[in-house]
Image (cartoon, rainbow, N blue to C red; front, top):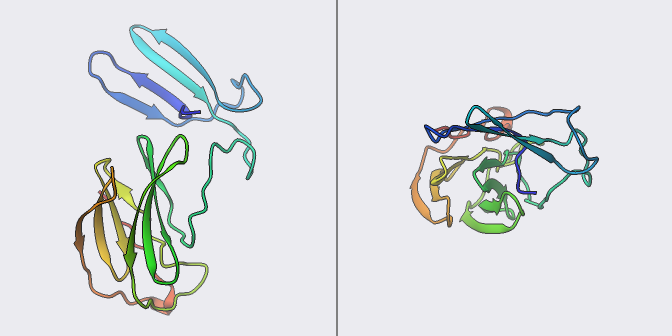
Amino acid sequence: MGETCGHGIYFKEHSVLFLLSVSVRHWRTRKTGPSSVARTLRGYRLKVTICPVEFSHEQNVAWSVELGLGTASPVIHGDRVFATTMRGEHTFAVLAFDAVTGKHLWRKEFDTGPLAEITPPNEHASSTPVTDGEHVYVYFSILGTIALDADDGKLIWRHELPKPFYLLAWGPANSPII
């Protein structure tokens, strides 16, 4: 636990870290959990962690948490996972979790007021957040774009945007980018 699946190459001279996500089925040394191999090659340290190749709701799951309504993807930066959800009919929330343990770190909630009807399976919390590690940026249809402190969820700024029009009531699908 606590290891990421992939290759990490640490360059001594430049202090740069490159990560490549890989799944290596034939190097697996145990039936459960990731395995890890460390090697040295010409002054470089190469760490290989073998990812599980089979998943289910119980098998090879480090942790899970019930978020609520939403179709946005969670995002990971360092040791944090950020997600968005609807917490009730008129409350949009941004949440942060410890990436290794799943421990809830913070939650920032926003009152949305009445929301337009949208077509299932879309949900109002459908915009994927983005982070640079210092801030988490989210978009919500009637709230606009919001920047939060990644460490504690405090509001940094909020930029209101015009109320959206949904073609055929499809609902929101905008996600900020950095």
